[in-house]
Length: 485
Image (cartoon, rainbow, N blue to C red; front, side, top):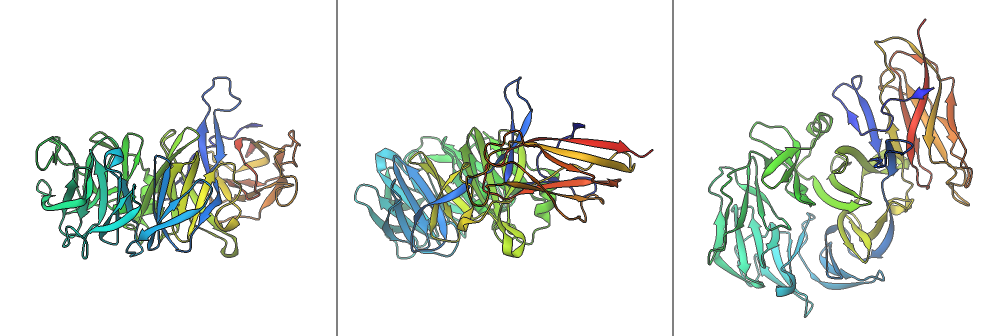
């Protein structure tokens, strides 16, 4: 037997599945850092979820954590979450079914600024009162539309997308907005469609085809100006796809020449992180502008989630390895994946908290949790590269999947965990029946997962899947291949 080349690898389905048809769903790739490791790469499980809190409203739209306090916009309500899983309603906001934003002006201001359905609200963290301050019926900027909010250097900022201008609040005072303190786009022709304020003090203003970055010049009364480095030749294809990953701003981009790419910018230098395969997939979607972006850091990996709700797809980029995988909730009764529902993340109480974009549930998220939303099993899939050699007919007497075995549950589903393997003899276009192999009951650490008598083909593809609620970790695969005589 020989090592199966690149059995452990990322998702990559090319325009032609015969060229490459690899899939990786609900696993991510980790590279071993020790020179003495048994393997160089492994597939580790993406996290499951458990209910942390539930509220009567439906549809999570934003989450925020600061200094031991956690807030979520769900439906028409602002909630505060506590470490014991209880919640308190803190006020009512407008709801148009779209994401909201929550930002803070820090210890100096002790306020949050929330945008939701075109209105802006200021929340006093000392008195726990919520006041509408921007938009129709608000105390300030009554004619403005609060499309996106942000904060930096003690100021709140709000982008009015219909007028392509952004306003700033008074310093450390989100209840006071001067209607004369605004900026309009002058160095680009396309209107602004999204705003994001970075943790390192920049205002990112995304247009339809180009973007720009503003910084604090220290001038009075309006302290912000565009950076002299100029305009970025990438616009934003999905206004809610923008997120921050460490020292990078990441978003789904487009340009005046068309096409879609995921870009990550360090400083003012955007770099493409999407692949041809991902860009081909996105180009085939009917709805792109509703894509949602989110980032979180776990077990040394910085992940960027890019969810297309209409298309029922969630892609995930790992900044540590530079590789993509898919995430999805397996709908067994319909034999399909849905986009992964957990969306809005905050880390507090030493817990990854994440809100469900469809229900009123806030989850704790962890790689040790074996189940998905609604208590559904997590179906994990690895479709490996084809076994191919100059279109020669190849016989495969045996394949062994090298994985961590003997990790079954004590009772119930998973007491005898099973891996499934199916094969395609035409490059991944049609598939045969599944075969199964035991991964060993609890403590059966020497179990081997071997499949035999797999036939012959010129372009064979193997697909491995699992769904038992155990921490599946795939390390490698070994294969015996005999060429045509």
